[in-house]
Length: 546
Ligand code: C2O
Ligand code: CU
Image (cartoon, rainbow, N blue to C red; front, top):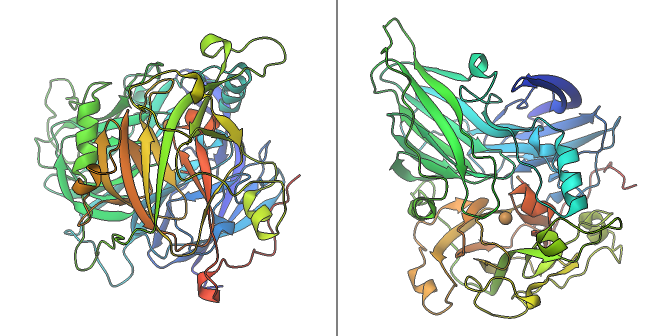
């Protein structure tokens, strides 16, 4: 192992919280919601021991940490490990070798991440600095969702009936719903700032099911990083942030001393209705002054379904691409993958009657028309120890047929197949992957996420991808480098990466309801033939599969 830098203990335990005038028990880490902030410097390695004192098996994932050659520490349940059962512990080695900025950690078992998550701050390596003037202060701002009910019951009953899961009751900023919700005014989160200073806000969308828009009244935002990679400074008055994404934003306290609302509300361009409420926090100037007597100003945010604004925001993001932070955009593509991302319906399997999905079916979702089945034994174990019958190596590089993806809705040919089919890569293949949104059942935006890699977003567009004309407009100079990105409704998004991280890596939509319905697959990158290009051996102890 590398030099030991720090050890952390995460204790999973049920604890009662009162929000929105009602009390319930949730699974927490170290008794807090959101969980503890992990602060490291680039280059550090942390050994994190997760001790599960809860009621059910859980796994923990380090979202956006690439874990070079070490999928054993990645965490998605039944993909790289089996769950950490109640009463047991598991130690994961988390190496922050490539990332700098903000990431987060979260449970990766069914919907447990609703309450089990926290921020990861990765400061510049000792002796190096930010590619922007050192901010006077730093804040973390993690947006979550609060359900009055039990989240595991909510998703399990939705899966049993085939219907949409019920929506959350509030969004939260650092665990607090804010002024606009019942019984929440006293606990609204406040950020205290000094006049004239610039602050780095590390913002995470940890919500379960909604892309969000976010802004601060009367204050400009300057995006300087996404997913722990720096960007060219982008001045804006709102950001759009999809579940899983992290954004580093500079805010200068240059307004009249007083109070200003910070707000986040959903962006939703689909047809099913989701929690359409607004969470707020307060930006509060410190010092002695008489606050303006008028009410607290609210930021002006794009409308609930303003796809155009969101699309333009995604399109305007640029990687920093400087001498110190060069963009290593792959150019000699050796493998092209075209992948449809769809909502679907599947025949009802409910033994006690019909399902509550469209026309008595159950809701499903798919990539390349395959609705992924999570196996009982983790894929990493099956791959490493050659256990057959767990998965098949035949996820296709193309959808099974072509049609007007964004024009046609329902078609019988769009009934997906189910299976545990994975995408295989040789070491160092240069991959271009185009995600194509469809309107198979409903057209929606999707927050596409890949474990084990960052990828360059070289192109994004609306409608069907055209493989002759669209590549001509690719940005190969300064595309943003991310691990999660919003695929626009009825649109496409082209990304590139080099398959240089041997291991087993999950790819999925980070909208949790879509993931629950099968919107994922797994990438396996084969070993490269030398020690340095191969997976590290497993740690002595991995949680057993029952
Ligand atoms: Cu945020 Cu599969 O993870
Ligand atoms: Cu999705």
